[in-house]
Amino acid sequence: MERVIAIFLSCVLLSASSLLASSVEETYQAALMQEKGEGNLKEAIRLYKQVIEAHEKGKGDEGMAARAQLRIGVCQEKLGLAQARQTYEAVIDEHPGQPQVRAEAAQRLESTHQREATIERPSSRTASALELRSLLQQHWPSLIVDADSVLSDEWVRSRIDSVFINEQIRRQLEAIQRQREQTARQMEQEQAARQLWAIQPQMEQEMEQVARQMEQAARQLEALQPQVFLGHESGQQYHDYAYTPPVVPYAHEEVAEVPMQWKFRLEVDGSYPQRHRDWATLDYDDSDWATIDIGRAWEDQGYAGYDKGAWYRTTFTVAADSVRPVLMAFGGVDKDAFVYVNGQLVGQHHAWDLPFILDISDHVVRDGENAVALYVYDGAMMGGVYGLINVHQPTDEVETNDFAVNRGGHLNRVYRGHGWPRVEVLKSGKHYMPYSSYAYQLPRIPYPHQTVAEVPMQWKFCLDVGGLNSQRHREYADPDFDDSEWVDIGIGQAWEDQGYAQYDEGAWYRTRIEVDAKKGRPVFMAFGGVDKDAYVYVNGHWIGEHHVWNQPFILDISDHVVRDGENTVALYVYDGMGMGGVYGLINVHQPSGKENLDRYLANRGGSMKRKRSFWSRFF
Image (cartoon, rainbow, N blue to C red):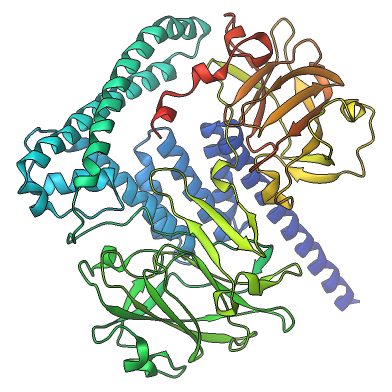
């Protein structure tokens, strides 16, 4: 009997622990929704703090608490609060067992210090060589400027002065933006909001004037760029490349935790690893080697100006089944990489700006510790393992040879340059483009408002092949239509990234939302982005449409929404090429003011294109 009672009490305790963990996870997800979906940063901070408090009381794991503390720092940084620095420092100090989170906190902390140093640096039309190099690196992070060559040419130097004009303009913009944000925080009453609207045209006119000056300076910089000489500069920073994640273009699960800190030793003789091949063996003693982080160039870790070879070594435990292949994915190594697992060469790669994957199945220990060594050689500029590393097994039946470079596969990355980063994966002669840089685009709502519904992230989804025709299956928009056999899909991501690669036709989205809105005020639905043609229905009624893939839009749904209950929302989306689907987030709200807002409504003749955020014109 005593044994039965003990088993019963153990089950109760385990169930309670599971419920607590689930509650903490739900709180963390709710905080993410407030931060990224609603833009309510203060509420997000409050919820993240609950996650941390739960961990302190023994009700949550350290990993979730560390991530919550990191997100608090991000929210504080978005709010312009100086506490962000202390929060990032706390993440680093208080969570030694979370290397990935600490690495991201360190990166963000370093970025805040750099940004503050840039703002505090005095502007001058007469620049020293050090200031000149620093400013050019700020505008072209991928370049290293040979300052002596530039300074020796007075004609080029006279044009570089335009950089300092641009610096002054940037500071004016930041001052105006800070003034505007401070004013907005103080205007909590409707009367204060109307005052903000009254001064907004004047502020926009001033910002437009400064924008024109900034555009002129940018053109001067673009004209100057081809004349800047490449050279090596001691102390070059490569933060734009740091912590580049691997590209794994198939469903997978990680089977090992790869450490961020590895053993490190220089190899100054020769450009290939044969000279010290024994350093890759399983039982080699590396205890007297230095340590270094992966995810950052070695120039940024005390080896500025080093342009030869080096070895990296580490060990980690793998927990993989014996059936599926085991692969190791690299975010980026500059430039020549030779990879050894348990003393055996598994593959090599020789393109500095391409991610790559190696099949390590033949030499990995699937249920124990493994020794991994990398020989890296780089002859100029940035060097080392600047990307992250992932060890995984595919979860679906996929031909991994198409992606593993030591099995004849290839991942072709078109790097960021001046635009957004994109990755093109080549498989069996077909193209599939992940569109993560567009994911979770927030709606633009350029007036005071109150959110009146929680829009779910998961919707019902059904393909509609046969060309653009929103009337072909008009019954899909009816509230009584049975969509129980439809599949699930997430909004906030292109459908190509959710199993519908290369699909270039139409599709329907459906969901139900609870609205709690006041009478006498309009109800609007704001979209972060739909690619490309969007037809929107509420409770079976056509509300409006939109046909610009890269513009947010707002629709007035007042005439057909149920203000105190459940509503059915349906979208017919058609896209004929490239990315498709509801890649932005959706917000249902009521304006706080009483002004005529038709100029913002796509179904009232307005256009959000005229009200794009000021900063989006430049970034």
